[in-house]
Length: 225
Image 1 (tube, rainbow, N blue to C red):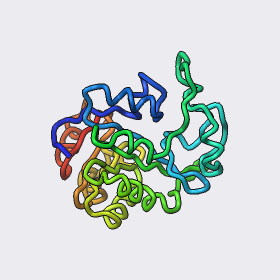
Image 2 (image 1 turned 90 degrees about the horizontal axis):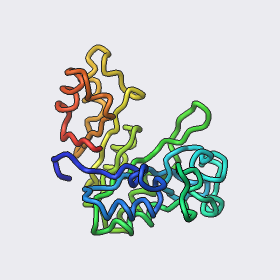
Image 3 (image 1 turned 180 degrees about the vertical axis):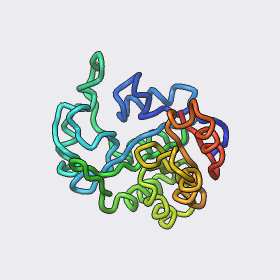
Image 4 (image 1 turned 30 degrees about the vertical axis):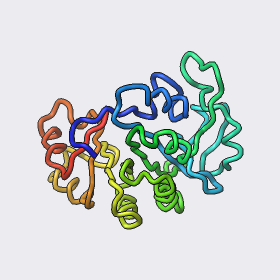
């Protein structure tokens, strides 16, 4: 991964096309970007799908929690159903494999592993780390992928499964208090993983010098837009 500021199509460029869909990623690959970024969850029957929310109601014409939904049901939904202004054609929820195949040889891919969530309780999809690593290996894209997550504890697991994969901790005030005593030391201790890059939410590095220093002090910093 390069150390310069990366031009990243977040969710495939969610303002330009329905987020996390193949049409969004195809469009992003026509632009001067360094990487595409996507989110992955796991279906009830074990498929790794590209989608942002835990609940599908706000992005599709379906309903329910991904924890309770099978792949066949999800494939029948329109992931462009709630796109502002509408979209001319229905779009399926893609699998991770489909997006990797699309990006292969064209762009780096930032894969954010999402936590499961039911109500206010967060968890981890059983086997998601292993499934994501398997898909990246199958696509022969180990050197083209960065795995990121708010679940910092999944990052050492990813590295144990595939040491050559680069990993990144996504940092926000939901998981770290930048104003707490010894906040910088706490953050560095928690995300100290070999080969780690750090992606920070923009509100954490704007306006306060301590937060700017926090970002630049982290090992192997990586900032994505």
